[in-house]
Image 1 (cartoon, rainbow over the protein chains, first blue to last red):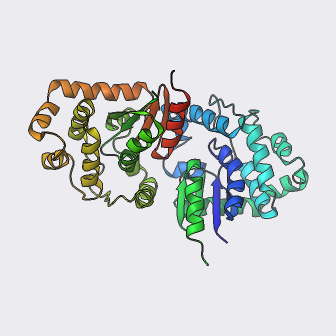
Image 2: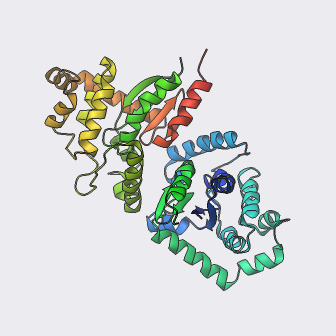
Length: 201
Length: 201
């Protein structure tokens, strides 16, 4: 079966509509989807960036907001973002929970919930209350949050970020098929096409 | 009639397949196309970049090469690029000729020719011989090259770059419809859709 990895970051605005689109698109095309939450912070830092390029280059930041408004309107998703203050958000705790969700099979619901809380309701995803709200009806919050703070989970996230760097991933969302990477939500169809055409028999 | 501006840079790799796609797509959709050659150099410089982000961030540069290979293969366009040495190329002379071509109606042929010489044949587009080759069968090279060196043309290019900056354009290719901008060749269809849906009656 063709396989596609979806590399995304909980603090990344463009990852939000992409996360809503990827599962249905893969299912429709008969492609196995692997959710890969990771962190952009260490990758940006390795390029000498201390924050998001949307903060470093305000003209890009303004464009991103407008572009996200259009993309979300088209997808029927609510969107409200202020890049004032501490944007982008601190997403380490969310990514650790995402890793557990990927292992246990409930990452899609958690991810959709969390992005809505972040980009429609403007809640702080580094706060435990927000993470608990995203886990409601999805998984047992006490257990998951405790496990997300274990050494094992912390190491798994570090390994995931290392894998992203080795794969040449530098932004989110990124789709990976074998060694091919496709950067940006607008490349979903290209990635799926590649997966289907280059699937091992 | 709906109208779309195509902002592109002769040194930009992604502008090459985009330039080959834009005219037919606009014609098919009944959208008037306005060719807008401009320079990214001054815009990058205003962000503190002394060269292309593909040089500043090698992981992005490697991705661009692979991505261009895929895009051009899909479009049936030859592509061969070395980012060693003096890449990106010096495109001021080409942009000045492009401006004359836009005014006189032969910019499409000149642009297609020049991109082929640059990205398939690896010729230096700052050299007069390359510019003359791209003008062959398109316009009278002696007259055009002389006019491209006039004060009027130089000022027109400066004004074009100022217009790009004022419009919030920060990369190439960019499509503009009214005040809406769409960055990246993969956004052509979004831009055309926007032009059709928001055309003034």
